[in-house]
Image 1 (cartoon, rainbow, N blue to C red):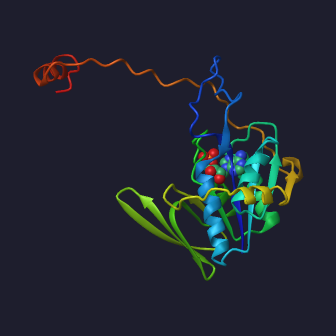
Image 2: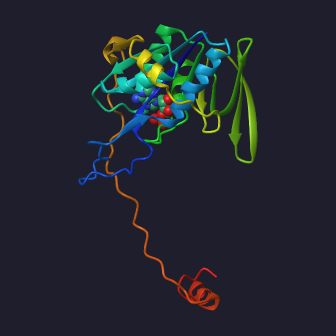
Amino acid sequence: MKVLVPVKRVIDYNVKVRVKADGSGVDLANVKMAMNPFDEIAVEEAIRLKEAGIATEVVAVSCGAANCQETLRTAMALGADRAILVEADVELQPLAVAKLLKALVEKEAPQLVILGKQAIDDDANQTGQMLAALLGWPQATFASKVVVADGRATVTREIDGGLETLELPLPAVITTDLRLNEPRYATLPNIMKAKKKPLDNVKPADLGVDVAPRLTTLKVVEPPRRQAGVKVADVAELVAKLKNEAKVI
Ligand code: AMP
């Protein structure tokens, strides 16, 4: 069974994001980039399926600029067998990525596609759902446990107030939640080995996909700054302020 894992290159989650002065987006100049954390979890899950003898091949895919190759090398250092870069210099919105992934699925014929539940840069939470819809495949989003056996995936999802368990016939699309697993670190020997693993390069036109953006970003603004607090002398003063100034009690 082949598993396809789409991985997105995003601003590292430790970086404090700065909005550009003209409000057109966030500043990416000289900013540390990394694999989207939910995609690390997706790669880890695919590798565990391979280690368990269920998956035979793990293929990582990234859509974006040439430097997404770094993210793909990381996926291969973690254990992916090979990688595909869909190289595009334009902004790729979730629908465009879903269409590119659909074209790759038709070429590669995986039984399972494991994506992150959302990318921490655009927070769209759309690509996996759109891909499943375009393919007409069953989907289980926000997976916190995945068991694959006998041509079916049994997926536990965290929902408000409890857990939901779904059974899906393969092929299927799964998106990962934070508690699915704890991704491993890439070891130095594996980072070296990853440099020799195959990395194919295709263009959206090779896949026959129009990636033109459908949405326009009007503006991006920083959240309002928090006001400075005040110290109160005692509980009586606190209660008086809550009653008379904040008017919350
Ligand atoms: P989003 O819908 O943008 O929140 O992204 C959800 C998931 O789709 C991510 O966690 C990735 O697995 C996948 N994805 C989104 N954009 C890309 C991209 N440009 N290249 C590869 N995978 C992507």
